[in-house]
Amino acid sequence: MSSHSNLESKYGDCPVIKTLEEVGSRWRMTVIHVLREGDLRFNELKRATDANSQTLSRVLDDLEEKEYVNRRVEEGNPVAVYYSLTPKGEELLAAFDEIHEWGEKWIGDGTDGTGQTS
Image (tube, rainbow, N blue to C red; front, side, top):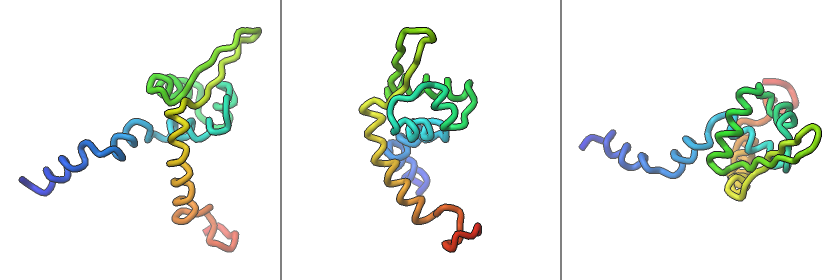
């Protein structure tokens, strides 16, 4: 058995890789991160994420189907649609906090430490 086969069998069912495959796209992670603010309407999410309508709609449908996001419709004129995290989505926020800390340490804010762009 080659070393590549060993790696494939070791990482083929890895929870980290499976999680990243499920939620690891730029837009999915961005929407989950922004929804930590609470219930948001479609246009609020669109402004906060800078996603176009088609992309945001597709991502929200996908996250709702995978049970990371709830969609709530309030009747009225106009109809209001709100999105929020499910408990499954909320549990990811701890991982986002860890990524935030790692990013501050290793990626920083784009400056060289003196406030000047590096």
